[in-house]
Length: 203
Ligand SMILES: Nc1ncnc2c1ncn2[C@@H]1O[C@H](COP(=O)(O)OP(=O)(O)O)[C@@H](O)[C@H]1O
Ligand SMILES: Cc1cn([C@H]2C[C@H](O)[C@@H](COP(=O)(O)O)O2)c(=O)[nH]c1=O
Ligand SMILES: [Zn+2]
Image (cartoon, rainbow, N blue to C red; front, side):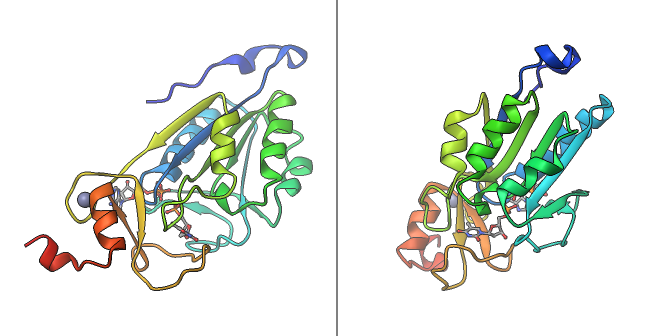
């Protein structure tokens, strides 16, 4: 389990910020882990700001909501740069669904960390086709701390790190949950993408 450094007790002029990334497939627990870290920061009486891209309206327009229905209030913003003026008083900045932000989100996270803030970013590391998703690989490269979380393959029960799309769209952005996606391990993802039907592969 990730244990946060406790450098926020230092005087502001001596504070060093940092970036944490929580990455993985859908259903891997990214949002739950983000909420857990943000709640702990609040218990520590730190000033916490929480943001998500405004295009993510899946469960709620404002709240960040996990697949297990845990939730935390957030501010939806259209662009990554919008976070900067809203986070001036924050000690800790949480960002969910970061894969949907414009590439400037990398610069924004650097700026926030350079201002002495703890920045916690959660997002999908791969899209439905298994390709690195948007800014997340770059964020993983520049972060001080990276946590890769895993789901359970719904086909075979192994550890899953792919988000398998169940509907025919080839658009990269397609909001959805279990209606449109399932977590799969490498083997079941590859079998699925070869369009081999589950029933006869696994009988
Ligand atoms: N295939 C699965 N593997 C693991 N957890 C799953 C799966 N399907 C549903 N869940 C639920 O999803 C929760 C994690 O949800 P969430 O934190 O929103 O994940 P993420 O943000 O990575 O999509 C788990 O605690 C579990 O209740
Ligand atoms: C793989 C993949 C996912 N999406 C969408 C589907 C969901 O709305 C979010 C991911 O949410 P989660 O908290 O990680 O479960 O992203 C997409 O638009 N394109 C994709 O390739
Ligand atoms: Zn599997």
